[in-house]
Image 1 (cartoon, rainbow, N blue to C red):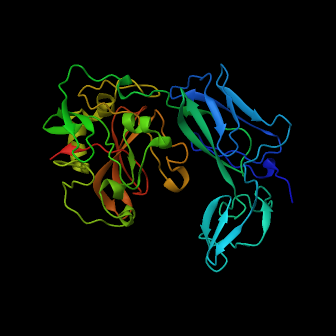
Image 2: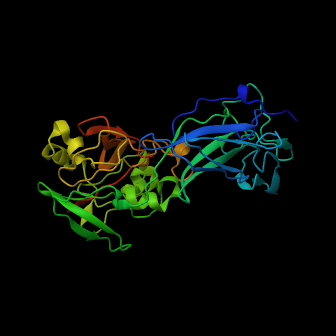
Image 3: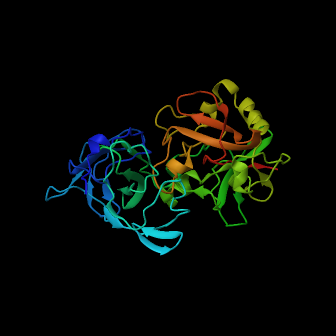
Length: 377
């Protein structure tokens, strides 16, 4: 069997949605942990999920994991044998897989009788993520006893992680509400959850992101704390309460459309958001709608009590499923679905960003996962 050589199989690491090594000839993985504002975190706990090896960050947020006997860090299943349980089903590394005509779902040939080392890769194959020798694991980043992020590790990457930013807060009220406006209250009869609401012009909006659980919705890092504070992330078809095929197909409907919102509320159309933006002073609408704190920088004035928080997002669930790994835009951006389609697979969304004074309008694939604010009928 060949040994793993990370220098041959490295890929670029992107912020927050990261990969790292689990078969590393240098015997070490390392990185830095900060809060969403970039402040170094001391005593954050970092754990490799499969081996339960763990360490803590120092005063500068730095951490590293090295085997004490100077052997490579590997997951439990670094060497694994495929077990066939049916002509089309087999188990590898504790997970069930399916094959068709001796190929996996990605079309890669599978030898179901071979025992192999998971990190033994050919030099010509590092970019082939569907290769049946690919092995993945996760690192958990914990703060104050709770997991705040999960980072996908792979046998294709080098041993240094980019800076990990995690949300260290736990309470929905750690970001102040606007005491100068009069909020009302909404109780969702489906699950009993309570939301503040606010009238802005002639419209009545939820002043919090929706946190109603259903299929194709997630909490960032599978954290209940995150859902309480930021709400859930939904694919567009889930937001519209319809089949997932409409994430990339035309969904014929008439606005206003209820979607997944509570009774007597509906998912805002592009034009309804347009009215909110106009009332909020288009040129500085984002400033007026953002919460006063909680952003990476340049918080807003929250003039009308809308209290937009920089929730997470996932622009490609196949790569950055928030349930499995870190998501994008921590502390930077709030993406909000509308009920309006431009074309198949092109959904209008609104972006409230830390660095722009105005709300941005564009289109995005329905397979992405964004937040929801409901508006009253």
